[in-house]
Image (cartoon, rainbow, N blue to C red):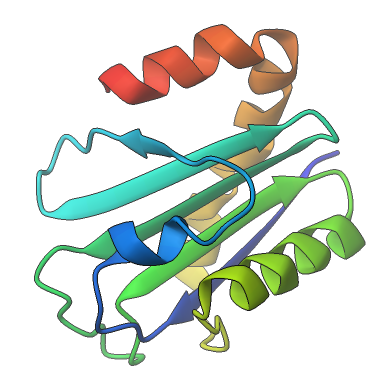
Length: 129
């Protein structure tokens, strides 16, 4: 069964610049809300990484303005991807998110198998959403 890790960070620079440092190319996701910048990558290991930032960079009451979500079949893989993303982008995800946000992020547990079945097509849909 897939597991999802979600953590917050404070990052006052544009997310667009930071994600360029990650060795895997992230896809810019069109957000329906328009006030959030999102990027994602699916790796066939498999894992799905999604990172997002409020465009206005306002802080949540927990003190974060960037969210990182990593979904895989292993807590160890999730933590490894998180650490690699931190090392390569300079964004440190050390802020716990609310329980309700953790529950909402569990949707990624159902999304991961869909990506595994059709990784290219699913990423294309992500670009158009």
